[in-house]
Image (cartoon, rainbow, N blue to C red):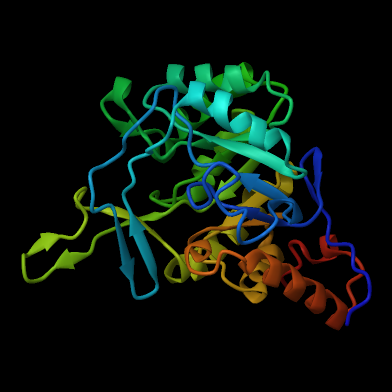
Length: 310
């Protein structure tokens, strides 16, 4: 048994009951995991990406397992904004945890239209901006790899939803992630989440072709965790801490130890993703492990641990 520990954490203007969220794309729109755990036990929940219009996504195969994770090339398949509002918002209204909607698009207008509509819905705590999408109006340059584009899209989306917390999700596919992090903050981001998946490929050696229809996919899972921890710490020290910007850390978290690494590195909260596919109730075990760790090290509050790397 363990004594009471305050595991609530500040996350910008919000206070989360605990630092655990579910990462976008791994847990649907809030009800898919209800058979395995009570989502209300979490500090927060990030929905699957929503775009202005419905998307079928890429043809299969679009998921492949690797030795230490998985590649996905789903292609932002989703039900679109109107169905999301009509069908999923009633489910979200019943939740007793902070819900963030991941927003994606192919041009800034797509993002701002979705953000403006969602800004009018009270049960949504904030938006997570997926900027790992091509900007088709600027020659296909991915928003998230160009600091000027990051600042521009953040400015315009924040203007479209000034009353909601705006989290900008950073891609690791850059030379210096602190440059895009600073650009997001300059554009008005209230928080940062990192990291998104790494572009990777798996080849069928008999056919000498990529396994995924899309050829490449996003690598997630334990394989990327040490890199993600490093990037979180770097952004925390150079961008987050000086600007008092909270960070949502994600990338291969399976255990309480994994989650604690991110918190010690500087993340204010963490998101569980790929591991939910094989162990959908793992957040409950992770929370228990975090409480035990705090008792063992005599932390009365989890906040004392954030950014405590020596």
